[in-house]
Image 1 (tube, rainbow, N blue to C red):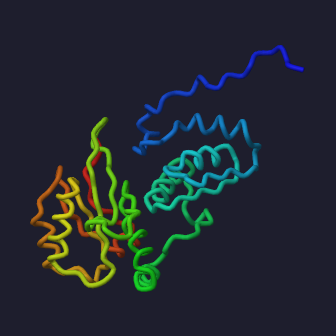
Image 2: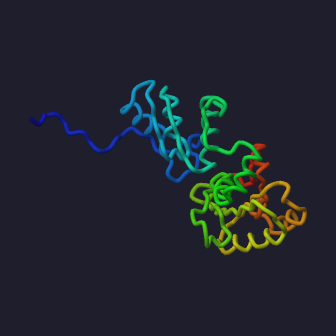
Image 3: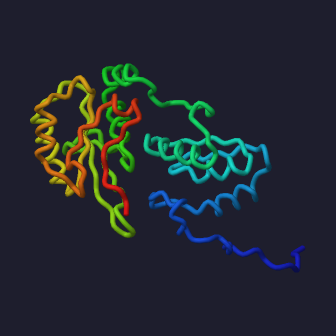
Length: 239
């Protein structure tokens, strides 16, 4: 027997647009925190478990933690983990030591071993160390580009960035070739990732000769050791 009440609508009102600059992170698919809070409150109880298998910039995780739910977040990109760590630290003063964190390389030696055992997996990992970057899902015919992405400059404008990863021997001509691949990809900047002991002064000089984009190097040499030391490539600041 059908009821006589109002049929539920398939839309919700009262969710503010994602205009808060403190909340906005720059992910094109980012959802308002208030929306995820409403979904979690409607579908779970305090102490329950929330799973987001594609957690991206971590809105679901922040909402679940704030509503006293247990949570599991999964993402393939290093940058997503970096963004989520920053959100949790800013909102709840949490550190990774407070969280059970699986699947990420933790030392330079771990990265070196992966580069030897499975170069393609190392490439995928290293290409996504830069914020906003995602690894190239094509294992062959990648035209010298192992990762690509874009980062915000100001409202409505983004810059394109690409990456190349070398786990073995490197030399200045690798930087030259990568800069050519960057130009062909019509990218504004490039990040060349390798191990610190593979970087020569000639490589740094060649990278410096490529010029600058909005005050940042067009080609930035970024090492695995930089990542584990908490240093990131120099990118222009969003206005």
